[in-house]
Amino acid sequence: MAEIYIHRTMSEAIEEASRYFPVVTLTGPRQSGKSTLFRHLFPSLPYESMEYPDTRLAAVSDPKGFLSSFKSGVIIDEVQHVPELLSYIQGIVDENPERKFYLTGSSQFALLKNVTQSLAGRTAVFELLPLSILEIDGLRKDDGIDTLLFNGFYPAIWSGRNIPRILYPHYIKTYLERDVRDLLAIKDLNMFQRFVRLCAARIGSIFKASEIANELGVAVNTVNSWISVLQASYIVYLLPPFFTNTRKRLTKSPKIYFTDCGLASYLLEIDSVETMNRDKMRGFLFENMIIMNFLKNRLNSGEDGGLYFYRDSNGNEVDLLVKRGSKYSCYEIKSSATFHPDFTKGLKHFSKNYPDYVKDSAVIYSGQSMPEFDGINILGFKEI
Image (cartoon, rainbow, N blue to C red; front, side, top):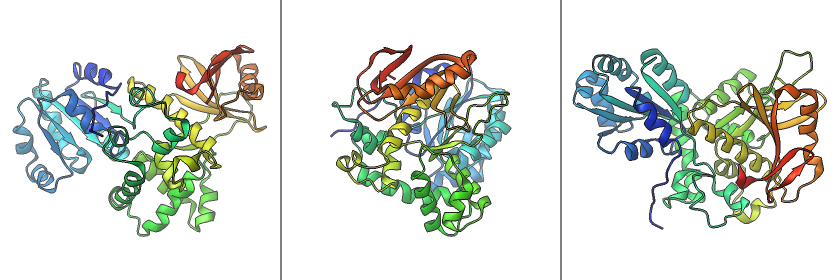
């Protein structure tokens, strides 16, 4: 299978931003397609990667001289390795805003902290996650849900450059040996890897650091530090809870998801499409895929996250609330291919208790879209 370029829906937002900002910063997990996207959109600009030791040395030893050689601009990959470049870029674009700089980084916290300090008001910032369902639409051959959950959404899979059983083991190995050591001085990488797998086993659940700390035999502060590393490197996403100023008792802790369901499937030791259908985590992985797709769609449009879940002390729950202005679109997510009226219970409870917050409600499941049920939309997952 020949490698193909996959159009990213974020392209339009980046091109628009580049007309108004001299710098565009693109963050996201490794291999999500950041440098590929920039190089496709701006093919006339030179490309430099700070992953290459010689290039990094040149940039560190003489940052001003390094940048001066790019008269029109440059694409700089993994710029978090040489944060001192950002101050020099600030000076250059202040004097000559026509020079364009396109920066990528796979470390969210380290990069964004330096960017906001050095390039505030001079850069647009985007987050690129792996492919959305829409972006692979023309590449799928009626792939079933189990195939999507097992493959995941990294571009290398869908462009024909790699396959899941080879990509994900090497991805984790590289991540542990490079990114984790860069972000946090963790001596026992095996313990950290066990922590990552425990997180995968809790997809769709409330994240409780104390539970994981007890299971691993480490301090709660250690677990909190480690989860921040997974967030910073775009391995996990913590979905915040919905809250209001009312006295109703609502959950205050986030739910944990992975930014890619294929990577999560590997960590859960699901070794084939065939075994996915029987795995106890299948429903949670489906929920993970749908929620990440909503997040991707918003980020690809240049919007912030705006995603929440609802749960009260009595166990009433809505899987996903998507902010639309001052209201929310509410979604219940089910991996079943058969609709059941019980799927709407949480949505009805939320609408009854918070009517002023509801824009619309829908059940998303793996079957076909149907007519409304009691005013609630019934959507097949392909419709999202």
